[in-house]
Length: 337
Image (cartoon, rainbow, N blue to C red; front, side):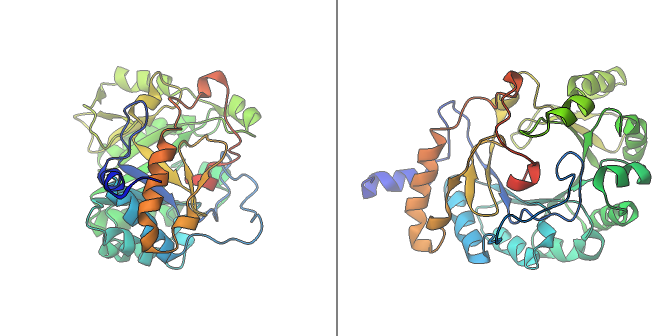
């Protein structure tokens, strides 16, 4: 156990790993339940594994407080589908009320967005990512298993009207499925101030066959964009591993998440905590580190922070996807992918 003077220094120091990477961004899952059945994530729908006891509001508050003391400035509330939590607005408020957290964001499938965009904005949510894998309603249904395309698109309009600092749309490009949607996406953001992010399909532990059938290299999309005059933006500290592109003729921007790109992990700036309170140092780590026993009371904060610093020493330099090592992550919903 650290002595009190040493512990004080630890509490105030930025989370950093052995490779000099600093972590100011937390992706905090609040549920692993999802009502969509996306083919690349939960093709058979969500099936609970035993009794679900996700982090309570007080546990979330203690978690956010500890992370805020060690340099975390941005928190993204994820799932599963986070808006399925009945107390989702309260969760936003708890995160936003922490003065050390400068950015509160969420990622959602958008099915509740039309009705609640203004409510969430008023609670303190400032950035929102909506998953829209196709602008063709039929393909949207084929990928997500839900006939909610129009509902989701109205939700995006509601978010734009509510005044969010940034509205992003995430799309996982899939060969043989939505890869023909690129011109339609580009036409959409020509006059709409959307940050469109194309995410390269990642191989998860039990999805090799799907990956081999539908993987589309992000490098190919990058080459196509640059051939059409899109310019790579100067990266900001908030970008992490994303490569962002702008075009003078377009109101929207494009971001590429390319996990197979060289040095993808060099700019990693985020950690993940699962809906049951496990710290994941990487999306593809085989197991999480339990934090929940130290989330029961604010008096445990120093011990919790000590555990965080200790675990950062175990973070690996890369995800090892290039070597075909994918861990045992069956689907991205389980740890807020």
